Length: 263
Image (cartoon, rainbow, N blue to C red):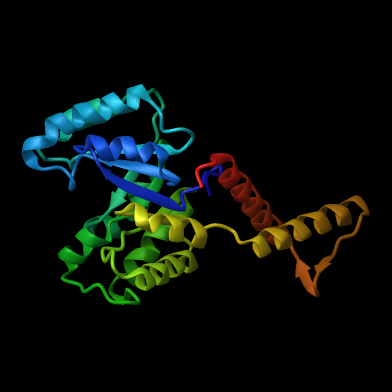
């Protein structure tokens, strides 16, 4: 995983051409925002959207959350200008969209290509179109793609985000998709509407029980080390170093979520 633990439970796409939405986003409880210059912006609004997004980022006001610019793809008329405009600060991190069959097949190369890459983002809508696949309740057509993306991300210490859920009227289906994404191992979910924030923030966060158990594991391990004991048992279960690492990461994530103060 990445060296710095950052919450990415909820990552909300916001249209870069919508000034009202960009302002509203400052008060939304999203862990991260993707200011979209691609799919959410009409061709004749690309230039204005780019200028607007750069302006709001320079003005600030988004607090401690991550803010990402989604640029138009290579080969598009806006790509070069978007790339130049997005390169604001030195050392800026890079997120990569994984949304085509070719990207899935080369996910490892994408993950390893740059030290600046911090996150792989599944683009299941575009992928479905290219595959000719259907959006099923259990997302069986995407199981291989989701797994390959997640494997590539974890192999190179990157975060990984699940794709969007398109049916805004299906709250139960959205929650099921979030649970499935967490079961896969994704850090969070990309979202298309603020109404999806609360469920994503809850489902991808450690529960109170998770935090209590992690605290017990870390405390027991540290106490055993101090006493020179080589074996640690918690609630009848043998605790190994890998469990302690996972427990410490979970506690660090819980602390990072609390520090955001965006709930």
